[in-house]
Length: 417
Image 1 (cartoon, rainbow, N blue to C red):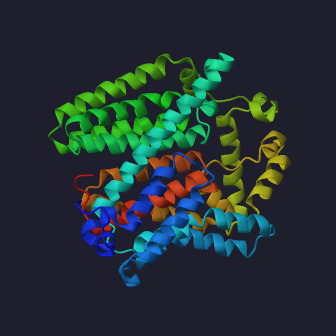
Image 2 (tube, helix red, strand yellow; image 1 turned 120 degrees about the vertical axis):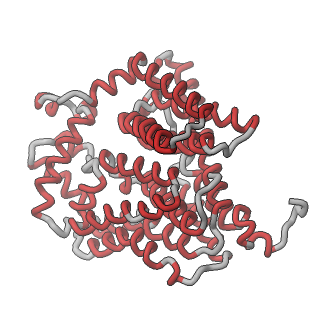
Image 3 (cartoon, rainbow, N blue to C red; image 1 turned 45 degrees about the vertical axis):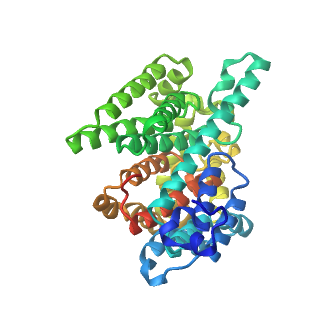
């Protein structure tokens, strides 16, 4: 780029989509997601402003996918009309506004294609790297004072995000790097750096020690092996590097004592006596099983949901009625996004949400977009064990990348990702 101050036509040109105002603002959001938690609305405001300044498509071009992706938010709006706790309902709608906003922005902006998509993914990789380095810095600082190695693990590892979310970001970043390496996207020094980053994100998953993160990495391994075998012709260099790093992860997982305990807990069937423990000592698998059983029992009694603002109060009251005072004290949610939606907004809302996750699959298959495919599979696994849409970190990550990947794919093929 020879002109240091390009004119307006350059910033808004479809041929320069990676340098448009909207692409740069979207990159800012992607960069911020792994790093910050409470400041994300500011980056979303910047994206909305960039959208106002950008050329638009005719709404009829993308109205169907916009409706499919944003319909779950409309169900939330409907369910607020029969909620009793209106304050919580309004707060819930504000927190989940991303479910409506991102499909509208990405589905209606003009010229967001392959170049912009690449820039957004690279920004996310950079943000994830900074998040991991920040985690190591704060863990080391705490360790230097306490001498306790647990400062490097689980909730102590990240100063910003719950370990489940940090592990989720690391897994997605790892797959983006892996598939770019497989596709020869990087060359020379950049290729070596990409391998180093892939190794960092993969091996360091032992520190958040998230059971969902471990499952997601296993999914990454199996998915990549499936794609490699299906292709018929392996990129030998990429495959050897992948096998070496994946092996290092599983060896570390097998010998790291904290990771061992976490994996062991996930395989246990916890006894009833554990339910009498203090609230902060009840094992997470036990709590999940109780919450799932309760939700499955109660959903038929509330086919239209208990209301957008009432779900927290309903869960606490039901846990107490069942004799699980400790879980009520923790304000435990259902720890399953599908069951949570069914109990709060109704069975139809849950079924439509599942449909919205399956909706991109024909486009993904026709364009062979395996990065988007991994994202859908990964987020689907997270939805099974976490209420991802109940937190700002989860709902922004899901809504942003789902909309960004779909509408950029709809505009351009995913080559050279």
